[in-house]
Every structure is written in structure tokens, then in C-alpha cells.
Image (cartoon, rainbow, N blue to C red; front, side, top):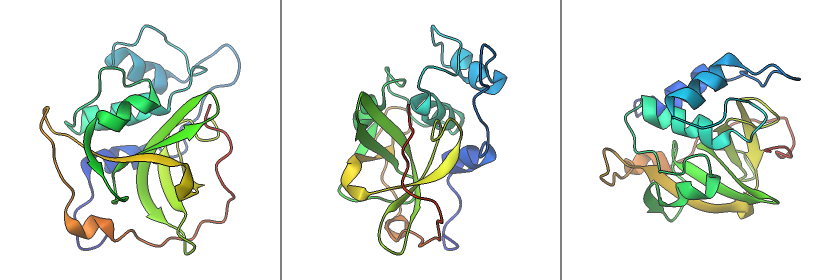
Length: 170
């Protein structure tokens, strides 16, 4: 993405790569802080927090956050629906027991999506997902208005990813 400036919500997301849940009765204070800022009624990192992560990044960047940001599927209506992925868009996935949400940051040579998200293996990471799992691609809105990505963002960077598919998003 050398041609275009980094998106503020993706820059915020990248700052947290490696941030992980705290096993046991303790909870990661950063995740708890996000929950407090988003006015959540819970304060733990055991509750699935992919939506919390995306909401935090969008809120910090001045982007629209849906009312029920903690539900991955609520992000399907959080901005402009796209017909295909664009760098930085929110991608919503289906999974057994709910959904998952993150930001598209690239693709593999075989066309799988590389997604920067929270609660991927209990941490913030870039994980590989088959495109067939995607339910929606959404460009985050600004102050209640719909926004659209620069056309260059549809040319996803091809990145190497040595890991397998994401298997733990709950």
C-alpha cells in the first residue's frame, strides 16, 4: 500500500499486535480499558472480544461504531457494504456459535484473506481466513455518513503467511 497513506484505524490496530488475554482470573488491563471506554457492562477478556477490538480501533479513528459493536454480525451494517474486500475494510465472518470481525490487510498468493483482528488465538494478530467464510465486507462510516474506499485499496497486497487457517476466534 505504498501509494496510499495508512488508514488510522488500521494503524491503531497494528499498534496492538501481540496483545493477548491474561489466562485465569486476571484480565488484560488494555482490553478492560477498551470495554470501559465503549461503555460495556462486562470487564473481562474471557468474553469474545473481536468486536471490542474493531470498535476500539474505529472509535479512536473517528469512524462509526454500531450500537451493538460487541456482536460481530452487527458490523454488517456499520458502513458501506462492499462487493469485494478492500485494504482496511471490516470483514465479517460466520462461525459456529456466532461471528468474527477484523480488518482486511492483505491476501495470500492463493487468495486467502489476511485479517488483522482481536481474539484470534486469544490475541491481536494477523490470521489467514478462506474467503468463503466472509459474510460481508464493510467500509467504516464517518460520523454517521457512508464513506467509500479509494479504488487503489481494492488491490490487496500479497503477503507471505506461514500459519494455517484461523481456528480460534471465541
